[in-house]
Image (cartoon, rainbow, N blue to C red; front, side, top):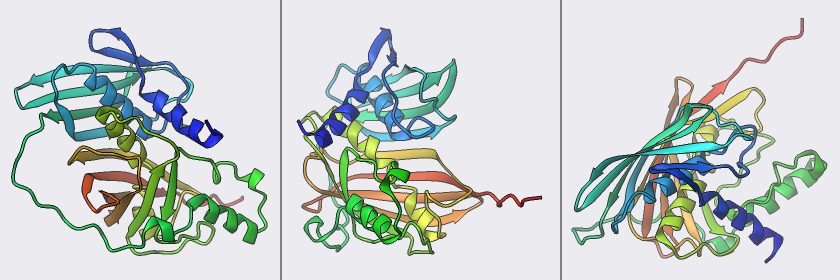
Length: 296
């Protein structure tokens, strides 16, 4: 296994929870994130906790959640599941993620059996394929070279992820300006994701929190390097439309209809390489630009 593939395996281990008691689970391993627990981690873990309470072949189709408090990187997380409904076609669960006895995250998840029905779907955006685009990390390395910045001074900027990302729209992080309120990125795992629908859904939830708010940021001319910018996810919803296979390129197409009142709203559509709509998501996040402090 290569070092890059090992990054993916570490991420997949996040989905393995310990059972504490009936409908209570815990994560005591190493949390991922920067300064606070990554929201995608907690979303994926709540989904896996809910799945452990379902005994029938019902799969998640709707996930609605709120980020309540920052998660502490060095503390365990407890997950409590409430069995709201067990029906023939639909199952409903609510899950809370706790640290120090306080909820840091809560969600409601609806599961459904597979059944036939009337169908339609929108077409995938007409964008260049991944073969014609440059890897995001390569582009970032080029930016640092042009600015004569030592990569060792910006380790997070070049951090290896569990996915390869090839953006359609090129962004200059060091010279931000207002951009059109949309963002298209081809994504593929750097290794093999197990062919297990529960894990595939959890992994998609995990990575859906990467860059969803960026379209809202881009539209107002800021990004994660902007001084005095406070960004934080407030809520996140996802709808799973069909069984998924994330072991090939898929397109994450994001647009942001509005940003105001220190909040940005983004919508994401996730398409397979063949153009099938796999999932949809929305997120509202905090975009608070604090004034610079003046030296007295």
